[in-house]
Length: 97
Image (cartoon, rainbow, N blue to C red):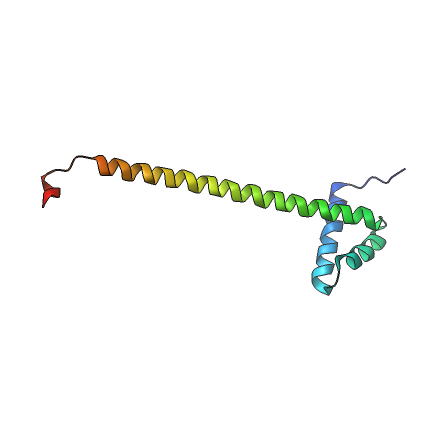
């Protein structure tokens, strides 16, 4: 029967892999092997956790990027609308100089 690991354990294991890889360099597979052995989980299991963490990080980056772009679009539409209104506004004697 497969072992059940808590989400906290998984997050910690992924952080350990990333920290070890950043400190030592080299291929991720080597970091995964060492960390998996020290934690008592399978290397393929840990590799899957790392992949999921990467994809969820990329997903959050894409979501935040699209949210900021949508906000920028709203601001630009408002500015364009204000410019159009100003262009259509009647001009008084002060503007005829």
